[in-house]
Length: 299
Image (cartoon, rainbow, N blue to C red):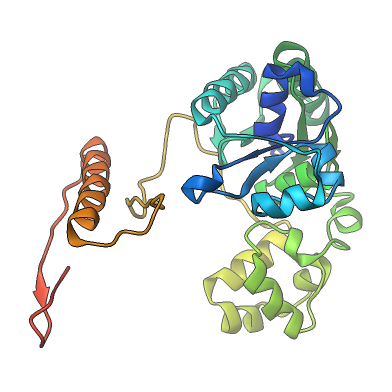
């Protein structure tokens, strides 16, 4: 049986949710950003109107305001976004129990063999319509037989769209696209591939795998499989999470720390958070103190 994999992406997630709570901002450019006074002064999300003004995620608040003086910047409300996306996941649950989150606003769905979704495209359209009617936001959904091409499909056309990339059309749709559009091909990998003369997904698909392996190791073979539609990685159940590769915590202080006591308080807070996460996961941590030749301590 051919697999039916969907990738659903909530369009402009944070900004779209804020629009629901701020109807007075309808038709105006809106972005979600941090508090510049606390050194979190970047754009985290933007709506389509702000995007057309040139606003980009990661841009500083002052840059965004310079580009778009009428831009309204709202501070993020992560608890609200989390609760809202859980409602989106409740709709996904009506179609399959194989739902793998990819960040807060994206999910893969495996509809293979699901009675309620015999046709992937029809199911995707139904999911999109329900989310729009019941929750007031839109999603873009890619439909394919594997996860990388499903993700490519959800990015292909936005907002509120369904794109099918099947075995009959993937070369026509996917291969002409920039290689940077492919899952896990980041900025540095794109630069290295460009030096090799590989600019499109199709050129990556046609590259000798042994050369990609020599240049990028296992990652080279992975993106080669992705480009050729050979990925068979499963979609995990929503309640089955892989073990974490690492557990950590970080923060940006609202001002410079100028003495040991201030640093100690900040580090203690971070350590307590990490320790709590370790306990929740059932892990233990070993802490070792080493001293260098000058007698300074380190861990």
